[in-house]
Image (cartoon, rainbow, N blue to C red; front, side):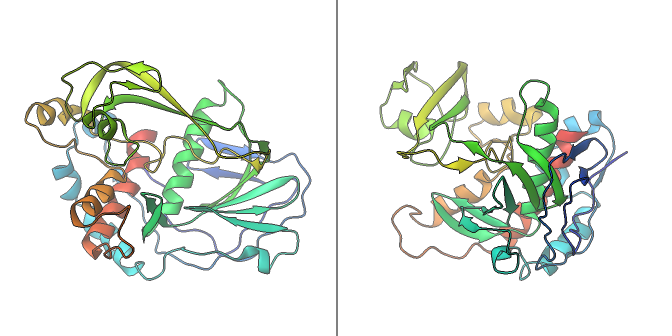
Length: 318
């Protein structure tokens, strides 16, 4: 049996010179640096949730239908619904902790400058189309856990900036100087945003970031080979940052592999368990780029997305 750790952050967050923090049984990041930072409070409590799956073989054959009819779904949904009004949407740690010099509010993360280090708080804010669309219960914990799992899996390939993880929503990391280029690796003709590969392709583009695209492709079709599409960042000076995310359902697309081919042949969207689920709803109900006021995401959409996000860490880590 495999079990996702309980989605229940401790009330007190702290780090000292000898502290270490673990996520699950395999993720361990220790701090050898001396820091006096101590985070003493976080503004939420959640019910404890664990999602138990059977084996890898069974997981590989999961469909969204099986996922939504799981005998654990009702239990998880009760906790999700009870937390709809108690999401971690805003933080203000710099007002209570003198060592934190400033706060930068990103789309999803609140970043605090501690001098030599950055404190990254992953909130429950859900962004897409360069806007905040909703708050999703437990989402911040899932994103932080997922990133840490991938950082741990890839640290033999490249070192990372992680110092400590004092809380399920919090990562303390070294500062890095920005390299102002973003690389997106694309393997499928898909997407719904203005910069997605499918959007530019259906508008007639056949040479995208130096990659020649063949004629006659359709949405969600696998590319002949993976391509890299670099973009530059609008910055004219170095900015202290740190890599904060690897292969989360916010930054990457997760499709269920076993059903992809049949659904593609029938012209259906892949079974996805990432935020594309939310993007597609907003694209169908408004113009998320131009409308000044967007409709509220319905409760059933928010709770379903929370359930799918929580499920991801189970799939990838077992």
